[in-house]
Image (cartoon, rainbow, N blue to C red; front, side, top):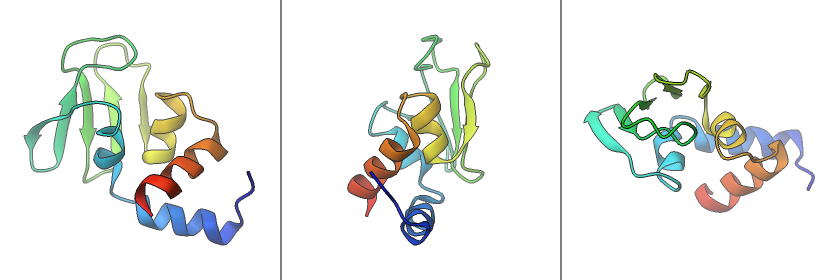
Length: 96
């Protein structure tokens, strides 16, 4: 797959601030506050230790500390094991 710089920028613009929407395609999130969500960690399975701050567009497991990052592309690559191109393709198909 090939994405032009314009396409990459357009995908980034669309997914900015939609990290929780992307994660919910894989894991059920529990709302702790309007912009904070938690679920079991997808890597270590620690109960309700995986936190998503939708306002800051970041995620982190507070148990294993191996899963952390910023943005939907980072989440797809770190947690779900997507390549960069596959993450872009997924986001293009799911959110655009």
